[in-house]
Amino acid sequence: ATLLGKIEGGLDHWLTFVGEPAVSPTNNAAENALREPVVLRKIIGTLRNDRGMFVHETILSLLATWRQQGRNPYEELRRVVSNNEMISRAHAVPAVETSG
Image (cartoon, rainbow, N blue to C red; front, top):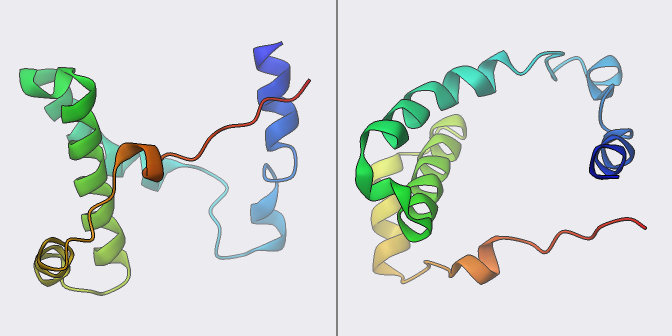
């Protein structure tokens, strides 16, 4: 049932690269981007709890997004912290609806 739900949920997105030339047909870029954080997660014991993982994942995601947008990650992080724009996990992770 879980596998079928994932298949049904992704059908509209699997072939996006056919109609969008800018979208790669592989996830190599994503895999390469995650390689270092995954190794760090396995080495650093403080990231083995939920809170540590959430903070680590959130910061890495923000930094990568800002770099891809051509923004200065250091300045953006300073702005977020100084403007108290940090959000809680409950607000950051959307609820996932299950089919059936």
